[in-house]
Length: 119
Image (cartoon, rainbow, N blue to C red; front, side, top):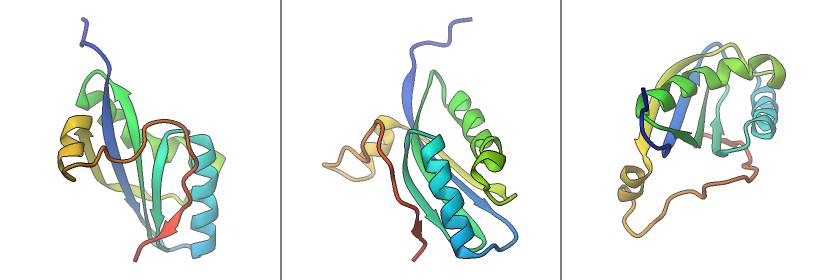
């Protein structure tokens, strides 16, 4: 079954769990940023983290399924805490862009974001 052309989806994944030292979380997220090329935003605290990126998929369900696996797939290689997904937002590119009129949103493509603490 052909599910149609690939589209871009803006994905935000939030994870949470047992607190870890902030430096440990930041360093692990830096490694995640090196491994997952299309991240554009990473925020963290001692007990939670949030990553945002663009995903290419034919349908929202496909993008969501891939997003649910990102943290666990990189847990060992990046040294990420064993936290669970507690939030997931997947928006089609056009929908995401309407949230900030006049903005095209974060860049699509390869770049290296820096993990920043939650305010």
